[in-house]
Each structure stands twice: as C-alpha cells, then as structure tokens.
Amino acid sequence: MHTFQPYPIDTVEINPFELVGKRWGVLTAEKDGKANAMTISWGGMGCLWNKNVATVYVRESRYTKEFLDGSDIFSITFFDEKYRSSLKYLGAVSGRDEDKIKNARLNINHYRGIPYIDEGNFVLILRKIAALDMKDTEFFDPNIHKNYYADGDMHTQYIGEVLELLAR
Ligand SMILES: Cc1cc2nc3c(=O)[nH]c(=O)nc-3n(C[C@H](O)[C@H](O)[C@H](O)COP(=O)(O)O)c2cc1C
Picture 1 (tube, rainbow, N blue to C red):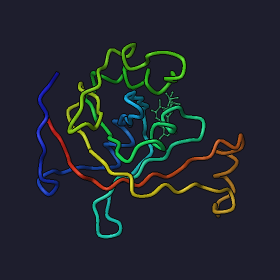
Picture 2 (cartoon, rainbow, N blue to C red):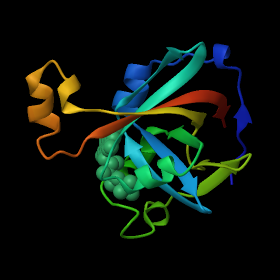
Picture 3 (cartoon, protein in one colour):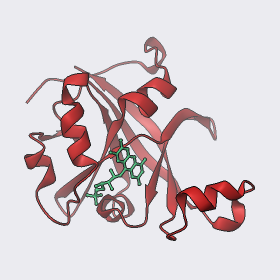
Picture 4 (cartoon, rainbow, N blue to C red):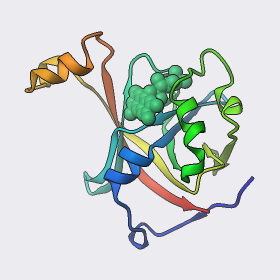
C-alpha cells in the first residue's frame, strides 16, 4: 500500500475541467464492509453552503449507487495516465458481475476507514451532504432528455463536502 498524506486545500492548483472531464476519476464507496468503485467523468468542484464541495452524477442503474446511498462518506481518486486502461475497465464492467477492482489490477486503501483506490496519486475524501434526484421536468434544453435520458436511467447529483485532500 502507498502512503498518502493530507494537504491543505489552498495549496493545491486544480483545473477541474481537465481533471474530471479529461483525466477522469474513480468514485468509491463502502457499505457493510464491501467497497465498489466506478469511473466518472462528469462532476464538479466548488463552494456551496459555505463549504468546499465536489459533486458527482450517478445513474440509477449503477451498482455503486447502492454503496453511495448506504454510506455517509465517499471518495474520488485521480490517477496518472498509465492507469487509463484500469479506469476504462472500472467504467465498463459492473461490480454486480465480478470483483472489478481486482480485475482492473487496483486495490482499495482506507483513510480513517474511508475507501479510496491505492494506485491513485490524488484523492478527495468527501462527506455526503446532499443527494438530488434529477427529473426530466427540470431540463430546459430538450436535447438533454433526448441525448441522455431517453431510457429513463436518470442521474442523482451527490454533493460531498471536502473533508480531506490526500496526495502521495
Ligand atoms: C470515462 C467514463 C466516465 C463515466 N462517467 C460516469 C458518470 O459520471 N456517471 C455515471 O453514472 N456513470 C459514468 N460512467 C459509467 C460507469 O462508470 C459504468 O457504468 C460502470 O460500469 C458502473 O459500475 P458499477 O455498476 O459497478 O457501479 C462512466 C464511464 C466511463 C468509461
């Protein structure tokens, strides 16, 4: 296992568009002693309710959603480019069907009991403070429904307060 250390959030320079949208991240949550993880490329970072927050968007069909709904804490791990194929794997296979973390050649590590992926180099530790279900009636652009929700598999927006930022 690698050694990660907490870093003050104001010492870190992040481009969230590049980090989340292009490099991707892995969302990890644990319930009843079992962790699951999935790749994400939609999300954001900013401030809300006087807190530093990160948001993620998880469709109803994802197995990881059950873990997020069953836990108060979750994490997002970011990686070097060399892990791209592992991230593609976590984004293509469901933890319902196999031990996908092992098969992606990744390992779960814990920070104060909170799971994240050990092979990453940068981790956001988050406390779930809101879960907002998206509804079709809320979209003003009709293309959003047509392009993303024609099958009814809606996203829930999870807002997490940044508790800790870990780096290797
Ligand atoms: C690059 C990439 C980005 C993804 N981003 C998201 C996302 O932001 N939200 C989401 O619900 N699914 C996203 N997915 C799909 C899930 O990662 C995928 O369905 C995964 O297999 C779910 O695993 P699970 O069933 O074990 O939770 C993404 C997949 C890839 C490859």
